[in-house]
Image (cartoon, rainbow, N blue to C red):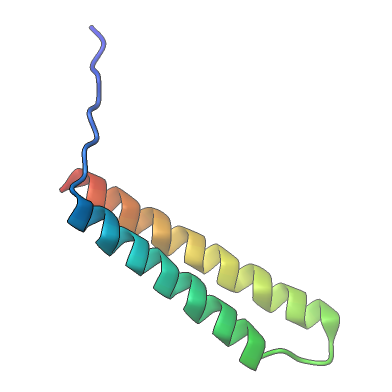
Length: 68
């Protein structure tokens, strides 16, 4: 038996999800900018860490929104 997963979100849920993702991306970009160092390797490492944290938190929020 195959199950069809129907994912329907209201406009309000889409808006809330979009705002959450935008906030996390903005915070990550600001932190990367303010913590920028003259050392390019360290700067790249910080950018990677913030991008990874943003991606993980966005996925958690997306799955939480879908499961509601």
